[in-house]
Length: 261
Image (cartoon, rainbow, N blue to C red; front, top):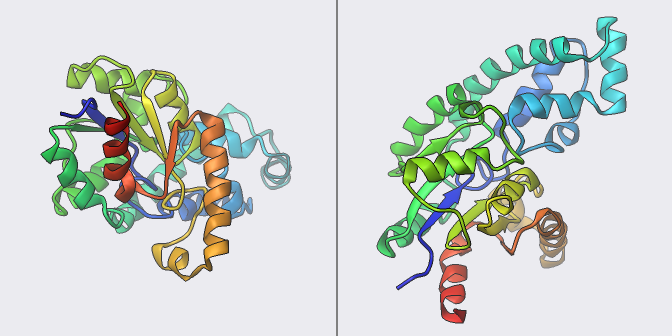
């Protein structure tokens, strides 16, 4: 009998979209429409946060703020963030379904969880309109979570606990270490930590690594270990109790934790 009652997964980089690629092009294109050039590295930095807060963090980068002033002749203020967000969301909606493939091993992990009687919910930095494009695609792959709490379902999202608390309420769960939060970004790790869950980071499938499965497989052992170490350090610094390569490794981890008591 397992001591874990439920797992709350993140989506991009954790359940789907190995490497978390869907938002990257949308951020770059949204800024480009305002005459501002940003890099993929700029876009990856705040991943895991609600998308409007993500744009705010990018706008706060000194070189991005300066480029905005030069291109727009105005400060990168709240009105600027609103303008960018209005452009970004439709761009992300347009591409996100193309990246909504479950990560390798996810189907097997989800089947194992079901066999153990462990319930599954989700939270995400995506908005409800973006997830409306994702959920049918993933359902076609055989997965539908009990709940999916989106960034705009609550007044304030990650890294705070409010999306998790809404998931708990909808699933009639009490927070605590018997709930597992699995995520690939520091803000998502922090939302799990804020509710006292057992927090698991995924190092190789997520935003920090930012590689496809094929790119990960093509790396030397040393190259793969370097990425694993870098991602693991960031995730543990954010509060992860455990770090695995991807959710394919979750059954082995939970089995070991059960055996340890």
